[in-house]
Image (cartoon, helix red, strand yellow):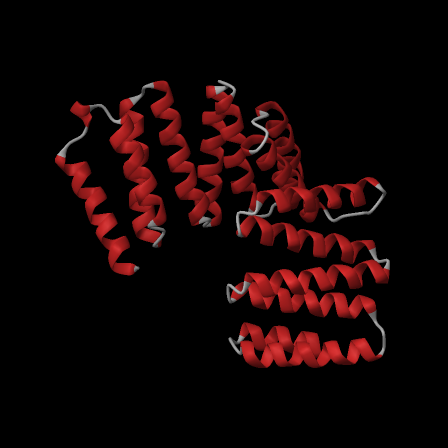
Length: 275
């Protein structure tokens, strides 16, 4: 009950009260030697710490949560904590640690641990990321993203957009440009339908990069323009700088004109003002 109330307090923005309730619950769970409950409460404390950008504290809570999960012998809890550890490592760009955590999670899965499709799809997605960015194995990366896509499509969840964007990148890297364009267009359409603004801006940027690779200047400028306008509309101005760099390095001199420069300048001024 205390954990449920803590979640409600957190949703109301009462982080101090939520933390106090979780700590009180942890003391009680410790007295009763409930390893499962201790693991769950420590995971909640880790989430709260990460929301406050206290990543070292979050990592410590998760290490303690994993120790309790092992003592509980509940594989579902172990998997859940490992997923949280994996996300935190990636958030901190600690990819060596993330890979080690992923390998531990895969061992657990291979030993027969049942995982929900929602969690398994994320595992495949991370495998695709690591294969692409760390191993430069684009074939394996595409296979992992395809496996993730099957699951997220069954679930009809919003991760479809991110998975499609990742899949398209692996296809483009193999020279499968037609497939990549179709995948990015699917990500774009779905992001518009679901209101996934980050994925929408990413899809526009991916399509612009693809147009640049193919030497299609008209499509390059069209996608850049639409992407910057979307970034401005939804306040996702971090995409503006990436788009501007692509514009300056890929648009031919005769295609670079004052109207586009003014568009980017306005968006970057908004980004500077907002920060």
